[in-house]
Image 1: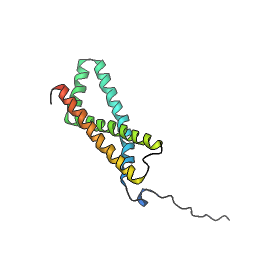
Image 2: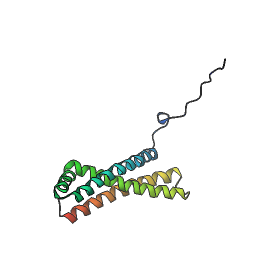
Image 3: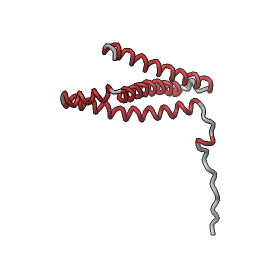
Image 4: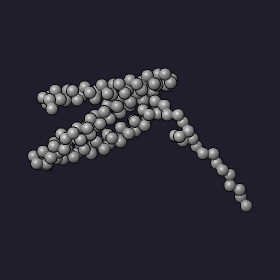
Length: 132
């Protein structure tokens, strides 16, 4: 009769202390998902545009509501965060910036630049359309 040996369990998230770069890694994955889902909303908007004035007016009303604007704000942040963090990963691929302190500083820079680009895009957008 064969004996069954208990195999060691692989460490999981609850074993590790949550650190900043882990949060940024998870956020990168989440923003990638948001971008995929947001692409469906962009496709809906383009289809509404091609479908005529009534369909487009409905889409514009939906995206112009407070909830629609919140979704677009999240999509905008996701776009800039995913872009900036992707550039950070490309930098890492060169073998640079992998030290703990450097990784933390570049992570902070990614968040700050992403928020700044999101705010800049929304400010420019509102200025171009003349306010509210």
